[in-house]
Image (cartoon, rainbow, N blue to C red; front, top):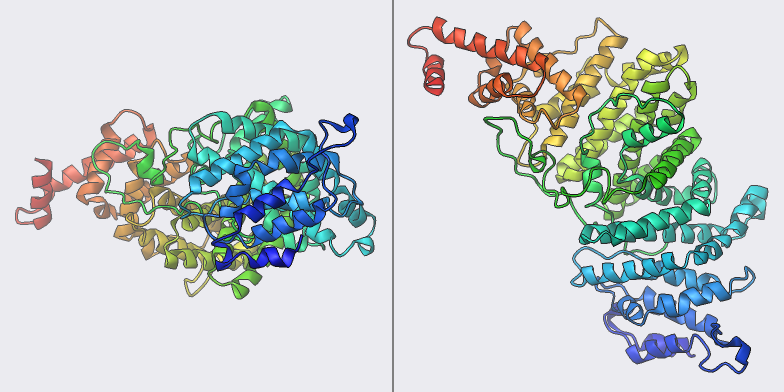
Length: 637
């Protein structure tokens, strides 16, 4: 077993390898003959099994090409089911020096496929086959996670008792959890078979039954302490994979039903959000090593070329969310999980909101800021930022819905997400938003805009339902971020983003986020400072007006809050005698359709009808040689 000789047989940085040598290593993991008849049927490892496992790991560490031929060959020989699972079941003493090697091999063999790999689909199938083998043997998970108890017990007893490799062991298990969850997501994206849903469901049940999620919540609460500090970004990604196909409003409804309360009227309609829809199609690929180092993203949000809406109101989700191949799948997941698993996820979210989220989001944010200096613009930094924004969006929405329903009964809800409501975090979000716009990262733009929108609507609820101390802190934060004599505050920033929105770059859901965020920030500032001027000249800019009217064409897909904002905006435009900005041909077509088409509401029909009637009245009172009159008369007739 000369490892140095074996390693020299490989060349080209993993592009070629000695297949015969690799096969000899796999075949030498166990004894070929068993002398004792009583041991027949049991897995008996070779005396040099530990060294052989280390040699296999050396092969995999050098398997650095996108196609990963070594990994594919080991999957073809069914290494996971024939050797690794029997090894873990049979030899699982904590004092055994070789116990971690099979786990490391599992991590390597479940690292997700890279985008651009010519055999990407085959890799996903192999990883999913390994995942199915694991789920078919649930007792293996109990053995696996029993080896995590030692490092965690030593941490709880005294950090001084921690061993040097305890941090690496914790990181190893977190990476395995991440790989398994991601493996189920990636196969779901590439398959229309319902089998992947059953595998993911069983995987989640195993995690809940073994209290793995409770362990993760405790890690989140200790995220700013060693040895978990370095794993905060990995923890964020793990929790993101737990919740990325779940609707916060649906989970809140499940908790309400469990408590015997009538589910509250949702603050948002049950429409598919961009984050939920893209969650199925934008799972982040990792082809790094332990610790979540990333190299590629499976799916980069496509640029959506959206034509100007005209005629009747639009109901096509593709025009609203952009190119989404999985629109046929049910809302909130691919496909929906059972109610029992969803209830467990709701309870997990509730447990995290009792302190874990607050700690992990701060630790992860500090880590991201350091990464921006060390790895500016790197793929890894971008993907971790995406996970951070997605999870933050989920929990701010989840806690906001709970606050709206039980604000008076649960005063601890507001502190549950307090760490993210900091002026430095808002400044970082604005910088991150600018970076996404410069690089035309559509997915990132939608994520950050959605989070900012939810944060401002949350603050507005705090002003209404929060205690005296919460309102005081909210007012201080608003003074820092929404008030500036130089017009460099967040409100003017949002108004400028609405003004420069380009439908050829970003989907309409991005415009919906920034418009709703702009109105939420404006309303919040008015509540805190009634004398503040929130409607400057940018507010009635023609492009701002046009973009508001553009959203009217997607009335049925907008949130209720956004539609209410659109009606109020049109009323304010008319009251300010700026209704001439509405007299673009495309605007009039959309407004006319809202006044005459079935559906909508009484409010929009009343406002739209008034605008059309006032415009027609203008036609008769305008002088005969007026150019605008000729253009509009030609259009009408």
